[in-house]
Length: 226
Image (cartoon, rainbow, N blue to C red):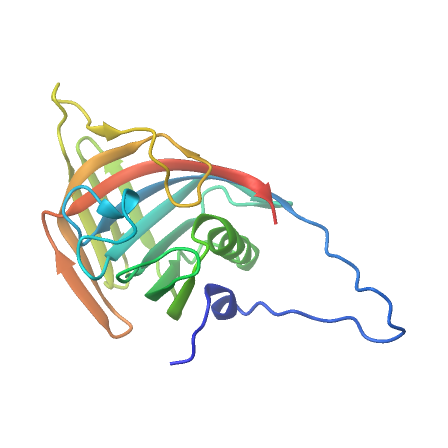
């Protein structure tokens, strides 16, 4: 299969200037910001070893991420309230210079085309800056909630679902991992630990289901120009 990046899946292209051998005008960088909360689960046991090592527990990392944007902008485009869902397999080794196995990006129907374009740019160039061997795009309503000691997210099309139960800390409250970087995000409020009760995906020729594995919620922030 020919290698594709998320950029190609989103339909981005480069255009060159023509004639007179004049230098091409440089596009002006767009300021952006993103404040988002994740409900996330993966196939590894608690907690994800890939945050401390260059590889996951298995020779794969099958994950679901359900995301609610608390606030943010890309130029004049507001990102507040947007919801998206990422699922895939990071593979045995991943990161800049590597190629991960597959990714499906699902956007809630309420997300506008300008918001989708902005989020694709932010995610692929800043938060997850690596290549994917296979990329698919989808659309489905996303339910998302964190209440009490439970976190739940589900796609209305039935392809993905997460039900996570909070892992209790020494004092009976939240167990939070602090001061650990979340991929390319600038900052985060800490990984709140959960274990999966339901963590499943069935779509685009890929299927997995786990229980009792890594789960967490996290609020992250990033900003810059693109």
